[in-house]
Amino acid sequence: MQNIEECRISSIQNGLIQVLINILNNSRDVLLPIEIKEDIIDKIFEPYFIIKHKFGGTSIGLYMSKEIVEKHLNGRLHITNDIYIFEKEE
Image (cartoon, one colour):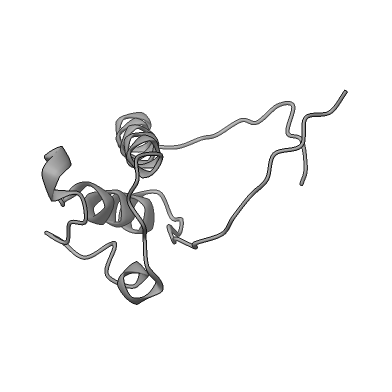
């Protein structure tokens, strides 16, 4: 793991903000008891694919985020199902 102290980004501001908000909202939702199984990871960026029906998701956010990142921000958006254990530095 690498600590990043300063980072400058030159990009389309509104698109980048929309993507970041959407990823943060989805990250928050994952803290709820929803299991992302390996067989659905490949579908997560498809339009109208949803795993959180009872939470009222629109199912379009991650698809649109991927479109914005790849078509307008010259980047790549992907997902992995990894476990990370945070160890606080003292």
